[in-house]
Image 1: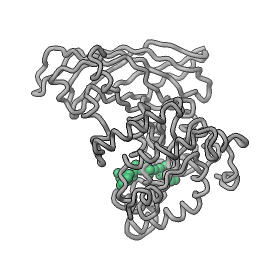
Image 2: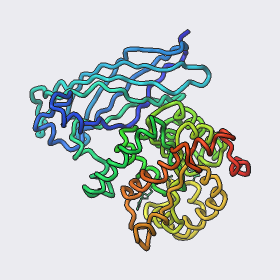
Image 3: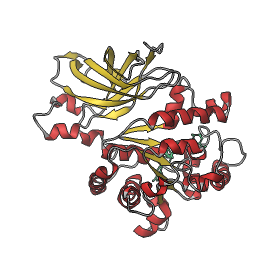
Image 4: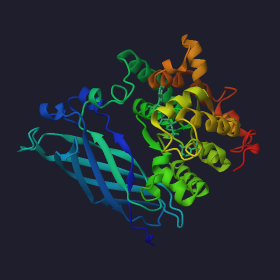
Length: 398
Ligand SMILES: Nc1ncnc2c1ncn2[C@@H]1O[C@H](COP(=O)(O)OP(=O)(O)OP(=O)(O)O)[C@@H](O)[C@H]1O
Ligand SMILES: O=C(O)C1=C[C@@H](O)[C@@H](O)[C@H](O)C1
């Protein structure tokens, strides 16, 4: 029976691994010189999905594709796709669907905005994970059409990595990937600990997709910001949505997930995160408060009420939260302590640690140890007797 859901799809922002294509001339991604000059070409795709109640579904998707380059229309793309998904069980739908996408650039505008002949750019048919919220529009954004050097988060962004750092991280990731075996990585930690920054880097080097829970919740609640959700509906409504999002993500594979700072407080959330490997980014309070003071507390409702300057507000509130949650974070399969990394590398201040260096350290020992079934802290052991309520968590209730 057809489910009554007629909803749009939310796809992740993802990068096509164009590096491989560039290395293999016979690959599908062919750059014309002018197209490869383009720094960032953004492709937006939206679709409608009518899932069925059957165990799995497989549908051609009518895709509307529009592209823009630096916010003006640059390329028209012809696209066709197939959606393949798992059973939808009302009233809660299962979250996993995959889109196999074939795209071909039909027409381009030149850099002067004039139409030019169609370029020979083909985007490889690839499976993209799809996150389906219970309601709300589903959009798909992918950044593509550019060689990895231009595209890489490692090379751009606020903390560009050196060539050596990027290579070390790539090598470490290649080492770790077989251990992961497709399992998702859940990054947990306080607000400002770098879950999003490091999560994006990790997903890129692992070839995983990246999801930020807070952003998914915002989409689920119709594009309302976290701060507004807290204000309009209260924290427990936010937490319910957080749990729902984690539940859906737990059905997916090959993701790096940046969880909300408070996701650790609900034992049920650990049940979902336990499907993958959880990593706690443990950052000293002073560094957290400094980072948050630099960007302001407006978007962080739990920090915004107290009086005082931004640093003092952030520091005071974060220290209370950390006291309440310290044990809950310690439930993670692995802990990445910035203090330990700094002292290992001979730095006095954790501020010297760039996200790439942290990701390298994270990739090396902590995660490998956690993934090793023979290890003391390995997830197999840690969770074997009590599947999701660990001894710490007994005292951590909602
Ligand atoms: N290693 C680092 N060194 C300095 N600043 C960093 C580092 N990592 C992240 N930051 C900065 O700290 C701020 C918070 O980072 P980020 O958003 O990644 O944290 P988060 O854990 O996802 O936070 P939240 O849970 O509140 O969303 C950002 O401004 C980011 O640029
Ligand atoms: O630490 C927390 O409780 C929160 C962290 C943010 O990521 C958001 O999830 C929200 O602001 C709550």
